[in-house]
Length: 276
Ligand SMILES: NC(=O)C1=CN([C@@H]2O[C@H](COP(=O)(O)OP(=O)(O)OC[C@H]3O[C@@H](n4cnc5c(N)ncnc54)[C@H](OP(=O)(O)O)[C@@H]3O)[C@@H](O)[C@H]2O)C=CC1
Ligand SMILES: CC(C)CCC[C@@H](C)[C@H]1CC[C@H]2[C@@H]3C(=O)C=C4C[C@@H](O)CC[C@]4(C)[C@H]3CC[C@]12C
Picture (cartoon, rainbow, N blue to C red):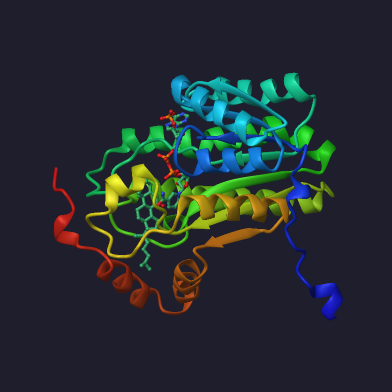
């Protein structure tokens, strides 16, 4: 029982020479994932809207030792673009080993005033483009027995105030990917799906948006990026990072939901949330 249940350990060789797409890689956690993959000698295709930033990240990846590095710029509001990115990987490498879905459309941390247009746009960028890329990439991933990694959030597992449109999209990812995981087992397809449930991380965007409201200390984006890559390589079903800050709310969620809700609110300076 000990030997059969022992967890597999992560080794950098697991990703050496692997062909990986990383979305939202021009900044934050996505950028750090690109650097980490470069150090392990992977073939990398990065994407985001801002070409200038992608060029800089690519240069850095080349210096860090990427087996190869390419970028495509465009917006994930457009589903044709989501397909173009996967086609590009097919053209470049004739296959794909890992698809890391990480981009999000910009959103606010504040009062929900019924702005369904913002919600619709966010559903397209944060969910539909993930679905589109997954569908396009699945034939290649089935062939390589590859992996899909979807970056989500604690705000996609438990209700947090001030993130209504954002949480809607992240909860949807759980629905899609958890069901698809089951579907792939039934079909006998050896493609792993990892849902990353992240707590508060110190990216520029998150710090700018919530550091004046959230009392907890954010976790480092560099370590977060490494943990995401490890969880994908090890074909885990979910990543919980930072471990304790995500595990405790997940435990409380079903057993003491009202207590969890008040704990979450007590972690915020609610009076500092801007009223627009
Ligand atoms: N930071 C945190 O505290 C937490 C983050 N997460 C999750 O981690 C992931 C990364 O977050 P983080 O690094 O903070 O985010 P960033 O804001 O740093 O990065 C977002 C990336 O998405 C790209 N992007 C934005 N809009 C679009 C678009 N319309 N089309 C294509 N790409 C787009 C951005 O580049 P560009 O503008 O050039 O397009 C950028 O590369 C997200 O999935 C987020 O939900 C989860 C929990 C906590
Ligand atoms: C039990 C409680 C202490 C847990 C509370 C954790 C809350 C406060 C944490 C968990 C996940 C976090 C959000 C997140 O996932 C991503 C983004 C997007 C970014 O562009 C702006 C910041 C934002 C909204 C984060 C805000 C703070 C959140 C809600």
